[in-house]
Length: 279
Ligand SMILES: Nc1nc2c(ncn2[C@@H]2O[C@H](COP(=O)(O)OP(=O)(O)O)[C@@H](O)[C@H]2O)c(=O)[nH]1
Ligand SMILES: [Mg+2]
Image (cartoon, rainbow, N blue to C red; front, side, top):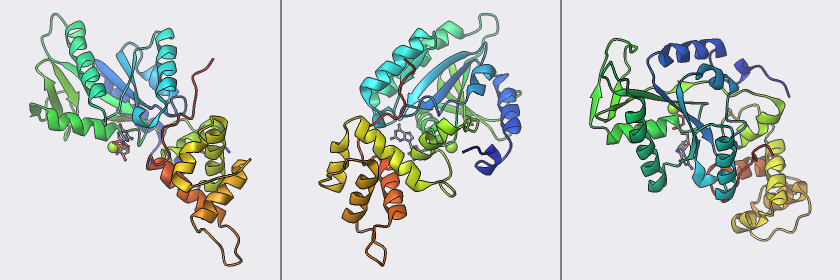
């Protein structure tokens, strides 16, 4: 499946890159959010180029939805690549403490010695990866907000997190790079508008991963006893259990697929990581 980004996202990628490059001029530290369930597909490779020369932390966000052991392997992978990375979830205070600790340590490492001003940071990532949620957390925590100042676009604010650290209240957004391999992972986690997607294809792909990972237990917990040998049969059984029937008594696989995806996105199917680090 090859698709132009314009079919999925408003605005052009070139414009998004342009806005981000402007913002980056006044930023010292960039925190790039990835979805811990799909670290490969949720990363736009263009960020890497744009962030060259900047202090750059990767956050494997929504770690509460991913398998902890696999997230650990991803962190090892990034460490081997010389890229700083941490796991994160807004639902776990431990992660919040770790991130704050990291940011405070950077305040001292990075603060320019000659020009005394706070360290300036921003969050970047693809749509729906959790940027607003994490910024809102800091907005509520913040000790002060400072309005328009030279170097900052009208309508934007710096959120003072600590005396030496300010956060831009507007995230940097790039659309994901949509390839054949990334379409279903992005769709599964809800990072693509669902409208024209092949829901059945995505649901079957998801069920196949649950089966390959021996995680049928999570499905049974939600849908009751399942005795299926293939993703197709599993989807059919789930449809029967949920009463997704067409008039002729056939299972409505489209509706069953939509419900499986909804449950997965609502976190009702347990923790699962859909992409492993490269071997
Ligand atoms: N499970 C989980 N969901 C999260 C977390 N952070 C954000 N979300 C959810 O992810 C969705 C998208 O978040 P949002 O902040 O709007 O993403 P943005 O488009 O990057 O600004 C929302 O439904 C959030 O509730 C997290 O740590 N764990
Ligand atoms: Mg947002």
